[in-house]
Length: 333
Ligand SMILES: [Zn+2]
Image (cartoon, rainbow, N blue to C red; front, top):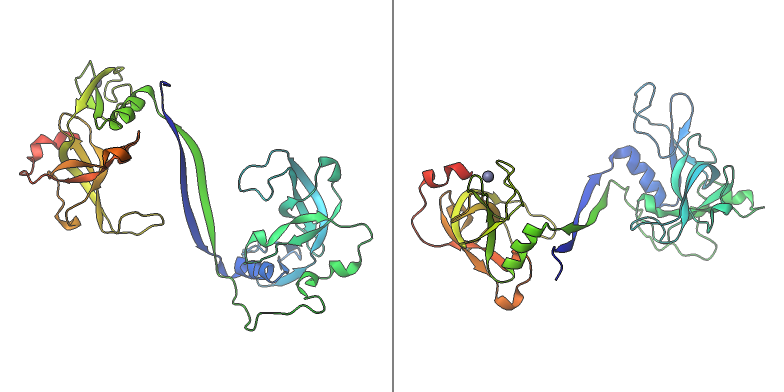
């Protein structure tokens, strides 16, 4: 058995934002297979359009369509792509100044080796098969075949259906006004030896803390040192699974992935014998009846569902005992 435990953790949420009229116009253009830039007060065309002029600070209201072809002005090779990047094989990120624009746009360039990229090379947009009004509607840039006709450089050329194509849209599509950006962080959580002992205890239905040899306080989960005086801790203490609610909040806000229907209570529970409270759910009682000082007991999941996780404790529920006196926990808030 290894000394310490570790587990993969993913923190993720979908960030929903409104685009505003300027970026919305750019994204609407992408969805329709067109590249829209904005003209600034000095006459330059910038893609994507800025919301405000960088010199006069006036709102940009002069929008220009540029060609889906352009010139690489700078680039960087990505030898080992990471999750979420445009390709799972090596590729380049390139700054491309579109024909008709004066400032470059950053996107992926699909080439198989850095030998195939050079500043000044001509490229064209490869549109995504399904376009939804996001920057990913541009799948990537790709090298412009030598001798490609100027027709490809016509603004909006990519949006024109080829002869025989059917336009299945019967209603004009609405402008893009919002977009959803998934944000995700994957990491490996490595527990300390003391935390590992805590989690292994939970796998046996025990709650294990540590006592400080200097001040005598008991911490759970143990952190390997006393946060009050910094003394290293090693003496293990098994704690009761009953305790007292010190502070709490009522969760009223729904969120993605929520497993319990609001309102419900998340509370700090001071286990009997501990000097620090830890956070858990209080269920089996209406949220509005939870109170400071309420006595609670852990409700464990069935033993065959136990792992080395705090989730072995499903939640805490009222014991029905009289409330603890405020003086008994006022030093532990
Ligand atoms: Zn101490």
